[in-house]
Image (tube, rainbow, N blue to C red):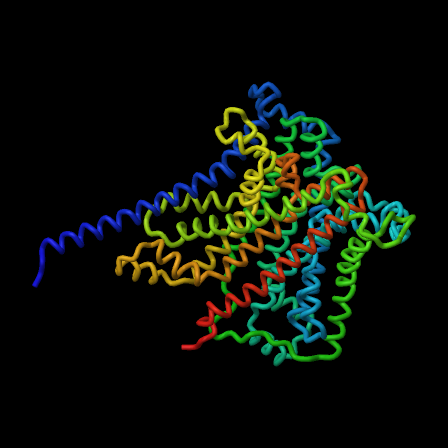
Length: 570
């Protein structure tokens, strides 16, 4: 027997709840769009407008750009940056391809250990290899004679230190590309008695060409936008990133700093656009019928691959080992007694132990707040029905940070947040602005990771929840987040490690109370305290490795307890 009054109440309740869900979703999307607008778009607009103004704020068109181009000492930085980026990309891609091939296509001994050790540079700030190279090949370096009269201070030092720092990034992409191969193609090549070289040229290279191109663009962008290594070991060899620092910090010429920033944006944006084009061209190479590639033991080939990897591993361990050793030497090169003197940061210029704890605090905030913010925004973009224009706008804003170098973003924050007319002006010089800037700087990679994880979850969960009248945020908390726990933990550790090591995005934004450890490394190097700078860099690296191990053990336990369904079959 039906009750009309009860039916009407249920209908009103359903409509009310459905309406409140939609209201919350649109409010969430608006908050996401506003955050990205203030964290990224408006600061970039500020830097673009500053580049076409004079010191009094009057619009002068392209006058500043013409002045930059007509000053040979400044415009040469463009050529220098392209030479450094091109050379480093060529070296890194060649070495990473050889090592990735050895790791994926051979049964050489100690493969797992070698792979882990090869990733070591990713936990260190880009300044650390540059400092280590000073101890190895500098004026009082132990291997100075190896350079045969050449100086490490200049393009040679920049290329070596950036090759060291960028190598793991390229290696990860190429290992992934080489792992996704159909073994049947190689079986066919063997049956046809095709030579190894021809197999490599006709099967392997075509199958990884998009991974190869992506890795090249990633390395090119990292090199051309890095500030740490050229600052420490570049000497008088100017590049675009150090030009911005010199114009802003050295000469207080903010207009010219903005001009160099806009110029630095161009190659980064071109590389970003080319990479997106490559990603669209990428098609599935591994079908449901494909067979995974399993290398077979071959003593000659395995030994050759091991011999190929050992020199690269030796360079990585040598540079890291030198940094660690130098950090314990009492006074290089006159007193080589090992001590902890260089770790007494409170006695050094440039930053004390407070800087280290500030970095821990900032990285913690960035990891926790950034993960929740980015994942929630990605959920609203990917899983909400309707509001297509708003969702597209948020996704578009989320992709912008990938093409913006950290130094440009930091300078853009000065122009935007240091403006007295800005209602958020009080954030300038606080820990909050460092957290916001760092989240914005690394937003895109985390957003893409979250979107990828969300795409793997069937939309039926949302449809069933809606039909059962379950609010979307309950589904989000009880279904979506637990299912995406591995991705959430990966985003958290990615943000933590990068926040600990970032220099370029925060070098313009810290105050005396919020000095960070990575900036302290730079300041101590500037002050001539190279050994303490190495000690702080080593401390950052050890902290990141410790947190990564902690993350691995925690995530291993969590995933085993909460994700056991992944290993269950039908």
